[in-house]
Length: 337
Image (tube, rainbow, N blue to C red; front, side):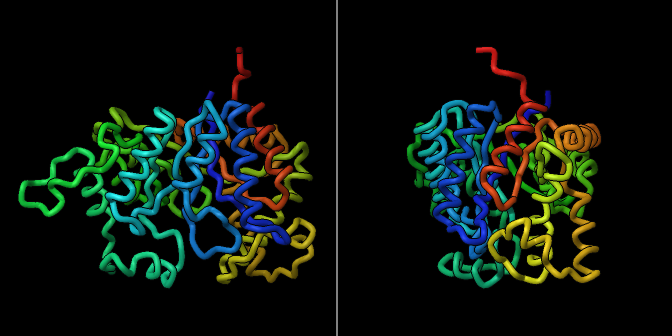
């Protein structure tokens, strides 16, 4: 069976709070651990009322402490927002506390709007250029202690220095990210749920570009995708109305908390809105178990993904848990213990 994992953005529902969304994340993580999901990643987004996940390193520690089996990681740490030394030390601390269970997923984007990105970085000497590769190179040089003698950071040690960085994953949604992940020898997580680049082509480019590294001896490709599964096709379609309105609002710059299915179904959509919804639905797997399995099986076959990482951004926390329970029955072998 294809490995199954979760990407959780800690969605904030209308009428609820960000603190409740974070508690929901811990609740879902406990369930996922019992169901046998391989890993559980949390995201980094800022200044978005619909997403409470702004500090993944903190949440990773909380989730790892509340679970016992699955890997826990970042999906991802947005490297442009952070000094490489800070990333190294925080993830070494996590790895020291939860050995063999932590993943370091890195993203190239800031995970927010331009003004908030400036607020995050204004003490760092902001460059208009994409400096991800420079930051990644510094991160790995700190880890491998191979900065040259004359470098100002030559004697800097990321602490605790007896702990190696967790396995590194690069997140991406483009051909460039796919090839970069291969060239730096990282595992690759492709964001099919919002990418415009074809997932199968991205996976091929990644594998063709792959060079072995200390982190990964061979390519490992994760397909990130959006799934809404319910007991029936009709119920799943109703729940996915929340996703439809969210995508319309985001296209207009409205980052509002997730609306209920009832409010979403009653919304007065324009023809342009409906076209946008239809386009987004092509990236969604929505339906009862049989419908969702057929869609995911097709995606897995096309991309040859080693793992599927599912995000489910819907209004009702109970319905979100049910969606993952149904997926587990479809893709995770029963525990023989």
